[in-house]
Picture 1 (cartoon, rainbow, N blue to C red):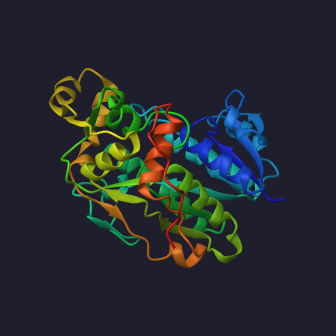
Picture 2 (cartoon, rainbow, N blue to C red):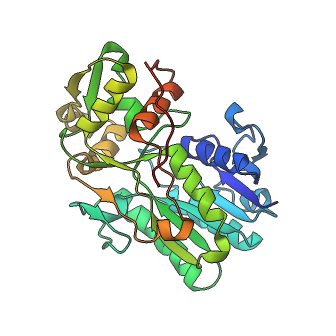
Length: 321
């Protein structure tokens, strides 16, 4: 049985990916600082390790075939991102494990390309973007040197899955039970979203085909590229009523940003709410045969259900061919 270690198994992404690998029949090891795992990761084995302790991480991942990097520090302080990545690389190399790595769109800077292809130029314009580029440069360099295999799958903003902490739950549906949808930017701007269960299934599909992949794969996950108006309409269908429309008060965030580190971090990345973009893949479908894609109405209804928000109906789950 193929084994995988999920780093950050208590996080929203780690939980979704860990659950998908358990359901796919993998031997899953969930690695957290405490060793405790959430209830929805039943079937996984909990292991305690701090990702900033290199030797502990090497021991925790000993014997696994694959490592999934789901570690996610607090958004206002990314000083540990590169050190953690270096430790993950060391653990993979010490144990001969393949690394599965979730990328994001920060690498492309502002203005972000409207159609982000897998060969789009890398031009980070923020600190977070430069950090992500440094991490990916490290992974590619180790692959080029023959020391590490990395499968990178790049996705947009998350929604769905258990847990909180995304734009979807913190902003857009935060007032939905009061009948209000909150737009994070211009309502007609296309924004790239990844429904987490679909993204997790795509990682499983890639893991199932490691023998067909190279030493460094840079792939894009096309999820739901939609506007706030389209998201609002899907939510209205889910809850069975019309919603009022509010806008995120960006001017308040900008005024307070110098005094509140989290707001400063959010404002620095705010261009992604004002510049249209979508991820395009020229290779993913050819590699896995089918890109997991839950129709928007079903995905939105499931995402609300995961947040404990009542829905009027749950549409049939179909997947596009």
